[in-house]
Image (cartoon, rainbow, N blue to C red; front, side, top):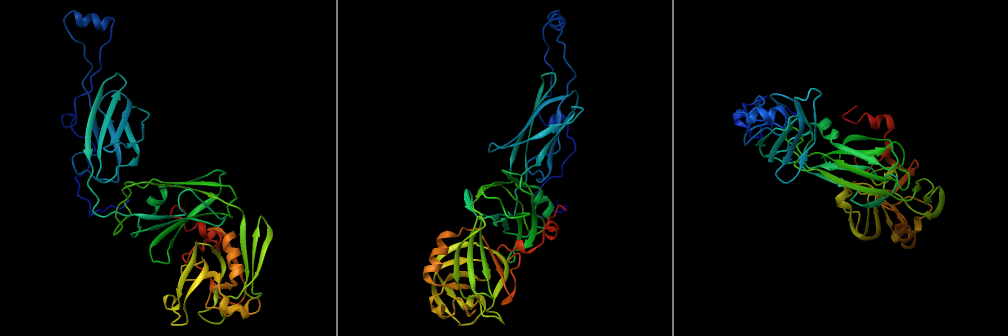
Length: 397
């Protein structure tokens, strides 16, 4: 948690505040029996007056801190901390019954109501409001909610603003799977230059796995120039069939395997070797199926080499490598690499492949005719990093 929050208007948090500033004092109610008889005889028997104190007070309390409720006398029985819009902070009472601390932090710009009851039936109430965040951080999640994706699809989060407090953010990212899949978060720089964190399994996902991400980020300060999160996020997705596209750059062929069996074998022409037009090797993950799109060589630093509409376009990297139909290169299919970096094939074969593959399917590209290995931030290149090295990219390791 950052120690300096220059963009937050706040008051200094207090460890305790006088009961008179909070609410009416806790008072134990007398029952029947001897106590009741004493009251009837001319005096009300009262327990010692006590009250709660809360570490956050006023109209501009510091967000990003757990809420701590302390009881002056006796033992706490229940504590509730609710937000103005109906949310609540869960927490635990200490072993001695004197304090309660929330599991999560107070979010910016939120009004909270604290209500406590003691073991004797008394109650007390307090309110406070946290300072508003002057800068808010947001994120973009992939894959989309309730989608079915291929066995290589990572859970990927790109942040709008820089994340300095990576450990605090990562602690709020809760991944659960239907079969206890082993995996790890890894921090990297996205191709766009923004901070990004991906969660990938140790090995390809098992088909049918259901995945849930609960990003409990509301109230997390991402650090200098990053701003605060002011909401949580939730997404779920399911893993589809075990499909792998194996690309042999040197043999000029592409094959689709499903459940370990080859179901398609396609002659193709990849990038011209020896320069910028060569294809990438390594594992690329199908990022999107984009149909018919305009491809302009100037957008990928290749001058005016081409500007044309391309059918059955399947994106593999942010830098512009696709698998697609390339009928103009028909003379080279199966015998030479003469494209500007993409994996080109006939209209019929591109259409058939397009209809079979799914976003998240891995393209395992091998061969000497390449310009290097797909980088981790250039699409989903995490599979080109060893498992040990990937784990080391977690902020919690």
